[in-house]
Image 1 (cartoon, helix red, strand yellow):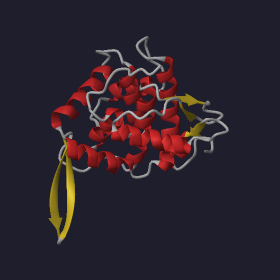
Image 2 (cartoon, helix red, strand yellow):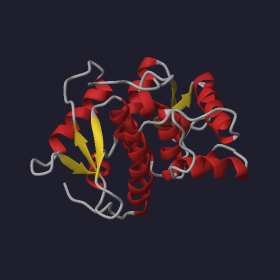
Image 3 (cartoon, one colour):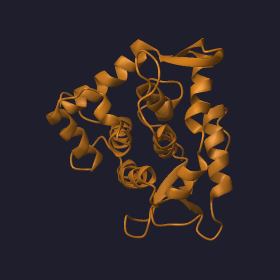
Image 4 (cartoon, one colour):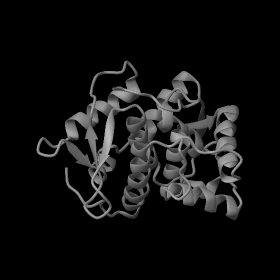
Length: 231
């Protein structure tokens, strides 16, 4: 049974939240590995929507099983579903997360283009030495809202729900968290949440498994390592 938990404030779900958070307020973006962050957020979104389940363990290697490939009518989500369907191994019904991250090369720019078209990002065309380029600016209110939510969790002013638990996992696992200006004590809270040490009753077991996989596999993808599986 499909279930959407803790809807994102952004039309593009967790991947859209990561794209907004990855952009600096005055243009440009922080992460040197933005594709990994967005691909990790896609894993979280697929789990949140009941489309996929995390398989395996840290020792055996994490994978992602496709549970529901029915088109959603959302181009960004259907793109991820189609890629997952094509990557899944028939023998296991899943794909190794390392293989998933590798297959999502260029995904940050694809979301950025969609979001610039539909509103959460603003783009300006500029020219330097005769070369034109686009500079992207995040919607300040939407980005501030996401940072406020993370800050409230970090200060233990609110409990993390499914979405915020996954957002914490992705921002910590991909190193983006250190760009948000949080105090050291606040970063420790997010880090412990990402490690599963502060998950409360509001976080489903399936989301807890996804959180662990995102932290481990995302860090491995950034460092150039694998997550212990093929596919």
